[in-house]
Amino acid sequence: MTLVDPERAPLPELLGAVDQAVRSGDLLRASELAEAALGRGVEHPGLSHLAGWRLHQQGRYEAALERLQRANALAPDDADILNSLGLCLNRLGRASEADRAYHAALARRPAFPQAWYNKGAALRDAGMLEEAQRCFERAVELSPGYAEPLAALAASAAQRRDLEQARTLAERALAASPALHSAELTLAEVEIAERDHAAAAERLRRLLSELALTPVNRAVSLALLGDALDGQERFSEAFEAYTRSKHELRSLHAARYEAPGVESARNLADRLGRYFGGGSGSSWSARAAPPGSAVARTHVFLVGFPRSGTTLLEQILASHPEVVALEERECLAEAGAPFLSSDEGLDRLARVTAPEAGERRDAYWAEVRRFGVEPQGRVFVDKMPLNSVLLPAAAKLFPEAKVLWARRDPRDVVLSCLRRRFGMTASMYELTTLEGAAAYYDAVMSLNETYARVLDQDRLVLRYEDLVRDFEAETRRICAFLGLEWSETLKAFAQTARRRAVNTPSAPQVAQGLFKEGMGRWRRYTDQLAPVLPTLNAWAARFGYPAD
Image (cartoon, rainbow, N blue to C red; front, side):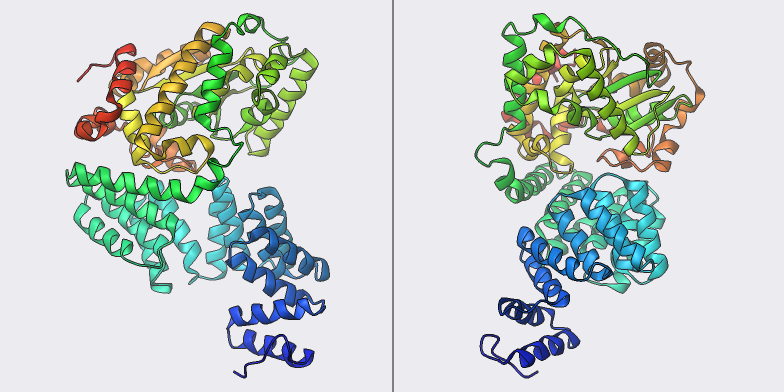
C-alpha cells in the first residue's frame, strides 16, 4: 500500500488512500486517514463512521458518539452506521437509545446478523434474557457460522443446566473462531458442572496465560478457577482465585464508584440508619392513602441480601398459577430515587401526599409493564434483594404491599458473595472484597433491624435452610401469608427456572432443584473468613444459627 502523509497529501489522494485502506482491511489506518480528512473540512458519512469507530476502539465513547451522530445525520438510512451508533450508546449506558438505533438498523436491513447480535447483547446486559435469546437465535439463523451469538447461546444453555447443548454450541463457536474466550469459559462451566474439575482448571489456567484476555474475562476465568479448585477441595487456593477475581473487577470499576462526590452503597445504608435511628421515624408509622383501585391482587416485595435465597423463592412463587414475578429490575429505586438521596428528601417522603404517591405508583407500574409483566389481578412478586435498603419508599408508596424477607446463614452469604459474579452496581462494588462484603452485610442488617421497628409493613422472614429442609411446610406458610392456596405446581420450580430466563448467579443451582450443597459451606473456609467472623458470628447468633 502506498503511504501518504495525511497532513500534506492533496485531498483526492488522501480520500483515495482511505478507500484503499478500507479495501485492504486495514481499518485502523483507514480511520486515521479519515480523521485527517475530517480535520481538513471534508463532510462524508463514511469518514465520520470510520473516525467514530476508531474513537470507540480507544474507549473514547463520548467523542465517538459525536462522530457517529454526525455520520447518522448525513446518512440516516445507513444500517452499518446505526449499528455502530447502537454499540456506542450501549457503552455509555444509554440502553433505550441504543435499542432504538438497533431497531432502526434492522428496519432498514432485516437480514443483518451483526445488528441482531449486538441488540441481543444489549438486551442481555439489561437483564432481558428471553428477548436477547431470540436475537441471538436470529443472528445464527442468518449466519450459521457466526461465533459470538453461538457463544452467547452456549452460555445461556449452561445457565439453564442444559450441559449437552451448551457444549455443542460452544464447540461450534470455537470451530468458527478458535480464540473466542467466551466459548472457552462456557466449556469450563460445563466441565465444572460435570465435576471434571481437573480439566476445567487446566483450561482456565491456559486462558489466564493469554495476554489477549480482557479484564472482564480474566475476572470470570479466576472465579471459575476458584470453583474448579473448590471442587478439588483445594480451598486455600480456591479462595485466592476468588479474591483475585474480585480484585480485577474492583480495579476495573474503581474510577466510577470511588469518584469524588459519589455516595457508596454502604454510606447510603449508614445514612439511612442514622436518619431512622435518630428519632426521625415517628411520622413513618402513619400510612399514606392507598391507591383508589388496586393493580395487583397482592403486591409483594421479595428482599434480603444477595445470595440469601431470593432467586429460589422467586422461582417457587412463579410456579404458582396465580403469581407473576419480576426479577431484579430497578422499578422501586426509580420510583423512590428522588426521596432517598438526602435527609430532606426522606422528610418529603414521610409527608408524601396521596396525589404524589399516586403519581409515583403509576410510574412504578408503567415500568413493571415495560418489562413485559402484567400484574393486574395477580399476586405480583417484585424480587430485588437490596430493595431491603429502599423499604421506606415501599412503605409510603405501597403501604398495602407485603414484604418477604429471605434469610440465610450470614457466613454462607458473605462467602457466596465473594465467590459469585454479579453485574456491577454500587451495591455489588461493596462485594469486591471480603471485608467490604461483611461490612455491607452488617450495615444492611443493622438498617433493617431499625426498619422493622419503625416502618408499618406486613413482613414474613423465611430462612433458606428451613425451605431446603422442609419445602412443603415452608411453602404452605408463604402461601398463607400471601393469601394463596398451596399448589403442587410449586414443586416444579426447577422446571420453571429452566423455562424462564433467570439472570442471577443462582440460576444454575435453582435449575437443579433444592440445592443443599450451599448449606454450611463456610466451614471449609474458616481460616480465610477469620478476619470477618466476629461480625458475621454476631449476626448468626442473633438469627439463631449455630456458632460452629
